[in-house]
Length: 174
Image 1: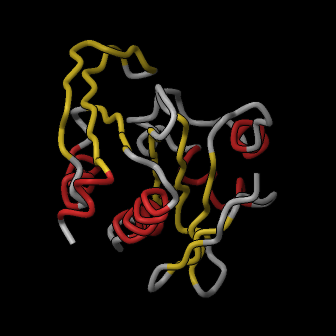
Image 2 (image 1 turned 90 degrees about the vertical axis):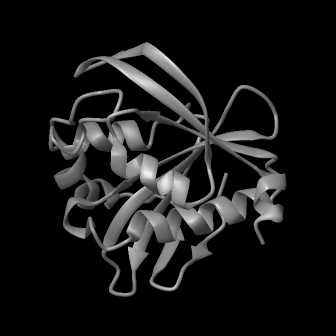
Image 3 (image 1 turned 30 degrees about the vertical axis):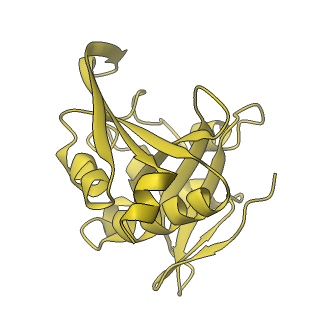
């Protein structure tokens, strides 16, 4: 499935393409940057490409690229537990953190998904990942659940919060 290209003030969100793994590897190959992922850092760009381009993965990927063609992050939407519900995820490249990339690009992605008929968007977040929690709350997401000792990852047993945004919530806030 070819993804719609999305535009923010500073970034184009475009489909994944070969070579993106090279730009994402400094981030996704760094243990500290992968602390809140469900898997450890990648050992090589080749291993990362195998994961990014997995043909059976049911999700959709957008790569944020600035006007100079530099990759700034990866944004995804994955089918959740039923039709009309999508889970989102995002990661900003290590050299672009602190620039508002995640907020700007996630806001446009959320708007696109809701305008495309999605009735609810969720995000599962390690409760220790305060920057991600702040981002979701800034975008109008509500914490709907807390699952204690819910997931075992490379860093150990984690508590996970689920944040949600209904299409009807989004319309009320405009």
